[in-house]
Amino acid sequence: MPKPSKQDLPEKICPVCQLPFTWRKKWDKNWLNVKYCSEKCRRNKAVQV
Image (cartoon, rainbow, N blue to C red):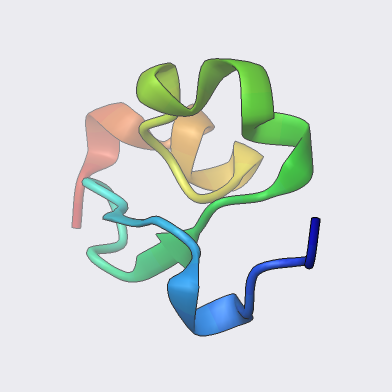
């Protein structure tokens, strides 16, 4: 099965930094639960910009 191109990957918007982030292989099993683009944003979720 061919690897999907980067533009075909699912994308979400981080609620902290408001920047889009794309699916990563390490998030394969829990993509529906991923909310933040990085550990830094997850730690700063109460501070929201």
